[in-house]
Length: 258
Ligand SMILES: [Zn+2]
Image (cartoon, rainbow, N blue to C red; front, side):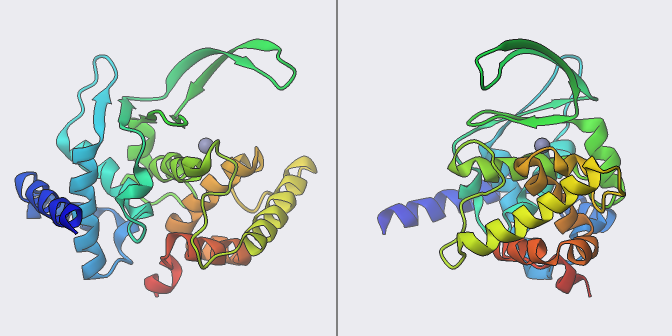
């Protein structure tokens, strides 16, 4: 009881001490159509979550890139859209968000299942580390958030990996809520994933971004991107997946858009 009271008091103190100006918030909600479907009350919740999230996390920029408060607030608002009905504790256990001005180059050694080490070089737009940072390319995120790009949003993608990692390595199954059961989730996702893999392998038109066919973790992340940016497309192609995501995120962007 005392702990709850202390927590509430601390929360109120942070909200008062680090407010988001009305002008900035209004502009963000107006310019970014992804938030259109939220009710006024949900927008108030999102604003509070955004302040608390920005306060809890440590944002840093790569060399020679300057990260402004409007940038961190915009990234935070998108990240908090995923947990709007779940709560900030879904992002517990890690602190850092590193932002690059554009796509970044990584070089690392990887060990495969047979213990063979290979040297990998890749250009990435984002990545999410287990118990570690989220790394983002500002340019890609900006391009995908200035105007909704159906099925594509880097922040939604990387932060959904973080939710997936709440129960260990990303595998396409975040911890399900009490009222959810594994069977319908597994059935919906595995059938949809196999269908997409079949389309990609046979050179057919992939009904959603073919990157989702990489593995189940990427499938969950890409479906999350569709869920918020193009819910009608996800319902059309994978209705059972959409229903499971409604249960998981406790939001129904398509119903609320009508
Ligand atoms: Zn990914």
